[in-house]
Image (cartoon, rainbow over all chains, first blue to last red; front, side, top):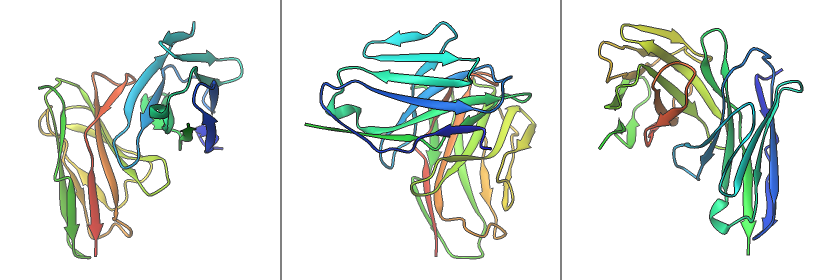
Amino acid sequence: RKEVEQDPGPFNVPEGATVAFNCTYSNSASQSFFWYRQDCRKEPKLLMSVYSSGNEDGRFTAQLNRASQYISLLIRDSKLSDSATYLCVVTSPPTDKLIFGTGTRLQVFP
Amino acid sequence: DGGITQSPKYLFRKEGQNVTLSCEQNLNHDAMYWYRQDPGQGLRLIYYSQIVNDFQKGDIAEGYSVSREKKESFPLTVTSAQKNPTAFYLCASSIQRGTEAFFGQGTRLTVV
């Protein structure tokens, strides 16, 4: 089983839609979780960290479910500029190296 | 400006030649990482270092080597032993292990 798994998509949604991605992780001892955004042929950029209590940054909401070992990302009021690949990242104990999922591609259309 | 600098952005090499990719950061971060990304694929960890003069193999270290003689620098050498070296190489750093990482712009290596 992969350490981090994501649905590759693509998710094709109209502008203004709400879309959610999930990411599952295999190591119950993982402590830190992040969402990154990667545009085509560019480097990944940190979108947000994911905290146990859940957190929100504008139109983006991230949540952690430790019991079921998944994290989620909700995007409200999608914009054309949200089109990108969204990468889930989990730390892997005991070294806490960062393990990336393969990403979920989002395409927002007019 | 603080950040992570990878150079060069594009690199072409003949098969059988070793090549070294540069990664420098001025963020005073302890941890540094090298990832490889193939078209349509996720990031795979090659090597990582959590402190100067120490580094560990990632999931695909074969055919690669690194050094961490200075906190700011973490060069990656792609050796002739790497069977499929053509890829997008990404260097990242984080303030310490387990914290969010920030990436350089990457180096696209093409071996012909």
